[in-house]
Length: 369
Image (cartoon, rainbow, N blue to C red):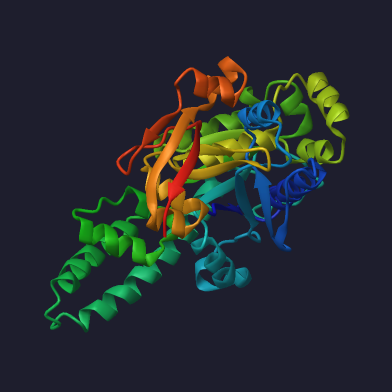
């Protein structure tokens, strides 16, 4: 399944620097698996997963393919974006297509980098973006409500349910509350909400962009970062502290030099790796593997997913003609050292249509179309 995260924020907060670092890092990774820039502002980034390389080594595969997250660099939003300021309508349209939002917040002072509002203020800056996204959704719901009002004489009972939901939602948004805090009262209302592709209903991950010095010393102690954490806590959002400048520098180094640089900074994992994994977690996703001599591959599924739907991620025919899945957990492979030993120990199970996949399962599907 394709996962897209839109990188948003005010101009000059480090969005494009962070995105360029993501792209360069992926290009620098092993050619054993593919990377592609789909458009100038869209890049696919491998989800870091140490289990994948261990499985590949034990299976002695020819090719390894990780799970991917697509990041979309959306141009800086400004006040009035929902009314078309700064080509806002075009950029907001891009955000509607993504699964989650990575909101980059400037958490450093630098007189050489102009701030659109004079100086950084994380609370104000976050509010500016949130308000524009809510305004955009308000326009969407208002248009939908007008259309539904003309259809109320339609005998379809769903029209009335949708109309009542739209009225409540419009009032909710008028209070500058995001759509993600609006509660659907029925399956029909949930269906209606999904059809609107509301921007403020998407889950949010905050990337607190700090200076190089702050990351090397105590970024967590930054008053700016603390403000972002307090806002995120109220919204149930995730915060990742990064330095876009350092990530850009790391992306230009080879693997060994990057490790030495991170050791000097006393960081164990790059901000980009943490960001990519956090985006994966934010969307409630899990990974299962297929493993063979020709290819070992990670596949992305929802955390709650039955075997036929997991098979369908590979190809729709696998789901249509699903018979069963041969399954064992990757930890059993790690413990015993080879798939042959896993089979010998009787740990390969046959699971049917009602089996819920577990993160880390190694699966082989039997199907007939």
